[in-house]
Length: 296
Image (cartoon, rainbow, N blue to C red):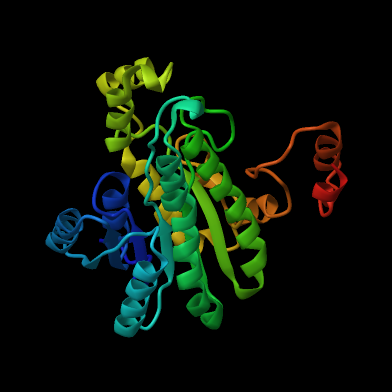
């Protein structure tokens, strides 16, 4: 067990299975005290059992991220017990409804936004006052397929994840003066229950159904890769890196030095932008981009 996060308190949503469970274990393995949160008590109890069996520290709470009162209550209990929350990982997410937007049930569509986007807001809103008071904190949100390009038949998920990225960038600017870093992670195509959802959707998933079949056979991106990126972002090694969308399988984050992080902080690299001549010319010339949104 390492100690790069020794004694820090981490709050991980969607920690009952899949990527969330692996992230919770990875943070605990670096010495963090993990609060595992999920809607399914049995799943998170198993996550905590595995962490403790490996020598880590963890507790769990059953809560729905889409329910602000539920999350706020859990945050209060964690603060009462440990006095602070140093790391927030907004991993909880759902993919349904799958299929053309015109066939989607509006309530299911809204429920997706409720978990993926509103859930992220709820956790940030509940945790931030303590981070601001201490002038320190790490928030790591989860992006996903559709955030940077169209994803037919997954409109709710794509819209929510694109919004999470822009929320990440905006919040990062709001809390920068308090030394709080906010970043988003794109984990890649990991074989989790979301893959099962695509397979079960059949024709409703469109071209993704065949791709999902191949991925099931070949294996997807290991969840441990996203977990390593999360532990990096949660550590002091990533201090100063904020407002970025980082792809676990594609970006060379493991090799980023303090100098690299400093350079990234001065550019729009790894952020969402409209691509047009004005933006590209400004970036290539190294000019500040403040006010670009008002000019286009």
